[in-house]
Amino acid sequence: MNNPQLDADGRLRHLLSIEGLPKKILNQILDTAESFVGVAEREVKKVPLLRGKTVCNLFFENSTRTRTTFEIAAKRLSADVISLNVNTSSQSKGETILDTVDNLIAMHADMFVVRHSQSGAAHFIAKHVPNHIHVINAGDGRHSHPTQGLLDTFTIRKYKPDLHNLRVAIVGDVLHSRVARSEIHALTTLGVPEVRVIAPKTLLPAQVEKLGVHVFHDMKAGLKDVDVVMMLRLQNERMNGAMLPSAQEYFKTYGLTQEKLSLAKPDAIVLHPGPMNRGVEIDSSVADGSQSVILPQVTYGIAVRMAVMAILAGGG
Amino acid sequence: MSSTDIKLPSAEDLLNTFAQKLKPLLQPNTALVGIQSGGVWLMQRLLVLLKNDISANAIEHGTLDVSFYRDDFEKRGLKAENRPSQIPFDVENKHIILIDDVFYTGRTTRAAMNELFDYGRPASITLVALVNRGGRELPITPQITAADITLDPSQNLQLIQDADGNLSLELNPSTPQNQSSRTQV
Image (cartoon, rainbow over the protein chains, first blue to last red):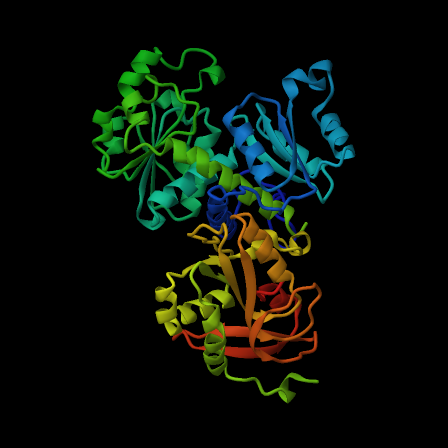
């Protein structure tokens, strides 16, 4: 199958989704990220790998954390970074995506980090750009958010190094979540034996089992003896129509409280990709509690994004 | 000159000579830094061989993987394997002894020095290498070596560590593959 993410030699050319990436490349990214974690702890938090390169953050959809961490990652690699908030730029004057991209290529951009509310947007741009330009998907619609999936996996690996012995539960709005899809593909590719999804039927995609996960509708049953709890944000903005009675009702059934968390293993860790809806999918006492690794996720996200950019830019 | 014409010295013998030559450098406020991979193997052995001098002067040590500072990144990209650099001490005002296995072009040393300065401003850096094979391309040369062997660019000299930790030198024809696996940049 033609995989636009890889070049003829099987090296990473674009990062568009975790799906279709071999285990070898996922491990290469995670291992390289390991080396970048240390860079942030030094006096000078920069390495010269992308000196002279220009990275364009193309955000057609709002994001604070993802855009900021991509920006920091590129800067720590010594790249020049331009962040375009396309809502406020020429797109609103009617310019097409590819015209925007072509104009930035004419300004000698070397790499695009793309977020868009339409699934497939990064793929569309990747197919269009010349060979020496690399595209990273920073979230497209409900489809994929590969660097989030990678940074979650990296965080899990930091706390639970033996991935072959883990039980992981992904809880919440799987239907609208590109994060969940990327997490599932990353975890199953890397050999996590049991990935569970816990959600009401209305928030699960059809045939979700085909992704290799075990489905639970009851949170208490689903959390039993898990090593990792990955909470998802309830994506109000992507919901059309009534999928849920109310946020309060949702919290009662699927919100992560200390009480529900106590059903998981005692040393279980809790992840959340942010931004959190406190009191909707997660209780503050859990989000700020000792089992939460939500802020380390953000820190590791920089190292993982540095690794992806460094691997893409090298040998091009 | 073909590879078979050269009789390579024993790396283990060289290591002993190397340790004796390094001894006078071990003073208070010095630190050892090995460059991955060969330089780290050598450092590990030196920590044992010179343990009295090292503990008497409270000498600290660390490792560097210069992958992020190589000048051929653009062409070759990152190696599939890279290890985190670990400098668990304050570089500021330290006398650093930088340890490499085979000194060739000097590009690895340049990369290592650039990386070290991102940790702080050392008082000095002394470059020591087990073997200087000749062929430098930069105004950099090791102050201490255990052997100087002039080799042709068509040859690739590598330090090898076997499963028991024994070191040996190996001479192979240069290929794009072993070029990239060398610790030399």
